[in-house]
Image 1 (tube, one colour):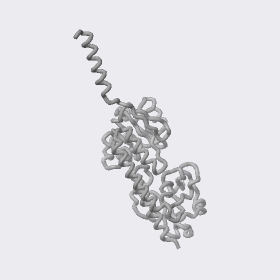
Image 2 (cartoon, rainbow, N blue to C red):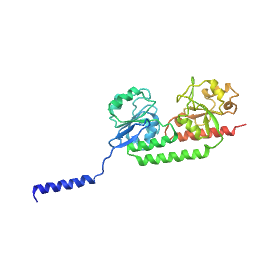
Image 3 (tube, rainbow, N blue to C red):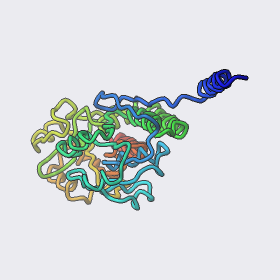
Image 4 (cartoon, helix red, strand yellow):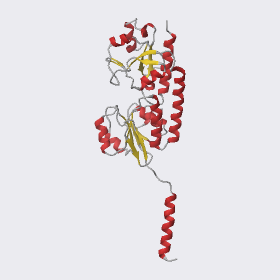
Length: 302
């Protein structure tokens, strides 16, 4: 065989081998701002810039790939050991860059925009996470699983989450309506409108957010407005609250108006804020507590 023929044969064999190798396709998903995030391969070095994001990443099977997270990233328990890269108001950009991340998952309304712009200038892929509806949590799990290369785990978690939400919806969504005031803060008095996931939880449980039509997402209201709405239940978030609790100052203050229906029927409830305010899989637990509280309110009707 001549040298030329031998070279041609080797080139042909090499071509067949290359053709037989699996293509290393890029990964593209759309984040919660509508932007397309493209990675050349599954992310291996991830930074989480919100507590709910940390929970989503772990649930999607990517816990071992998280290099750093912001303060209050405390679930699952192993997340407490992650190096901190700032909080929702201020990020440690130097430390984030030093980790050489191939993906940063951020909270659209929680992280400082100017600092996020600086990260974008460094061409680090950013995935914005801001679920608004209950099903968005399952969608987020699926998308993060694609970016992490852990779709099997993520899809299973999304399916399990959807089953639990469906079970609660079947049990409570068509129960008699309970008008609800969800109190975020007491001074000034603040609530959540219908675009927030908590409002979706209230609806899931057969309730109605009395201030769903207000703007912005977290509107300030007056005591007079609450008295005029006369909610049948008042719900707030509190650290570690897992049962109805009327001893919290921000709830007990409503007893100054004994004719308020929620007060008259003793329907002042507190739910663990980590379970009800974080748009992550554990919101199922918060929703279950909300549903039980509203069912209790129904049982107290006179």
